[in-house]
Image (cartoon, rainbow, N blue to C red; front, side, top):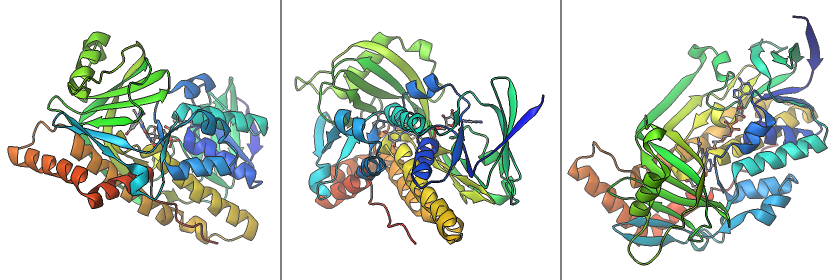
Length: 400
Ligand code: RFL
Ligand code: PHB
């Protein structure tokens, strides 16, 4: 097949939050990019994933000029509830963090806003790009080959940003001997539903229950988002809607008169639970960002927020490279990200350990877990630690 050849400064693989935000920040810095995405635009705009934006993420999207709809439609929450022993305990996020808050706004809405901004800027993005391959990442002239609409292309570039998530190709372009991978797989998963039902509470509820963890969340005043701890290899066919609702009622309701609102189930899926970090987040001219470099279990609501934090560092390092011909920030990119990554890894592991049912726990471990829940809900110091991690630690100042 004949190939067309094109050139850009930064080739971005993946149009998730990491890739799209990087493209947007670089566009604002006057640096041209091409985004290659293997799925269709409809698919990435409809993919239901994260829902909780940290204060820093909200501020960054705002400053970057893509926060208008988020400000209008996002739901600002000042607290969350932890539910155990049949009682709800409110963690006053804002009161414990000097007024910081979270915003509930779907990841797919962020993705839509960023795609719109990219279209308005007439910046190139190829959806349904096939057979994406990285070449020459350890030399001075990397490139990416791909197919699109039956045509083969080669994209020459200065740098490649691997923003292609946990199942992407970028990370696998790095020789395994150059990487260290740290990981943990949990013995459970989440069964998530999206329901056309008004949320019955104003804030999220994280429930620790003898039948397993459950989470009450939302997307809008009309849409409720709910999760149940389940087996990692759960067969969705065994979970008709009635069974899902029955289990949600059992785990989330306490007999105090509060009831979940039921509604049409719009979407149902199983999410595995994994922690993983790849170090370093760079090899030659390839830089990894977001889920391509690290995964957290969703209990801490950190995945998308970490992707945003990575991209903030990467966009700045690339801007300094082109503006001042300085490479020290690019060389320090991985180290600049990994401190925050490991903090979020710890918090996500801790929240997961605090709230889930572990079938292999001895009675001793179960008592320890219960003692920790009691502590978080009775000690101001412990609650503050949860709150500052949940709303997100402030970003480190950008160097140079
Ligand atoms: P993404 O979003 O996976 O985007 C990667 C993109 O790359 C594309 N791709 C390729 N493109 C070209 N060539 C290839 N070979 C490619 N291979 C893959 C993919 O199609 C995709 O479009 O990664 P990114 O941008 O790093 O963003 C990370 C977030 O998506 C992820 O961390 C969050 O969704 C995690 N997460 C949560 N994060 C939060 O911050 N707050 C939350 O409340 C939260 N809740 C969640 C979550 C993730 C969940 N699931 C489904 C995993 C709840 C759930 C249930
Ligand atoms: C969500 O609304 O999808 C959500 C909220 C909080 C989490 C994870 C997911 O910890």
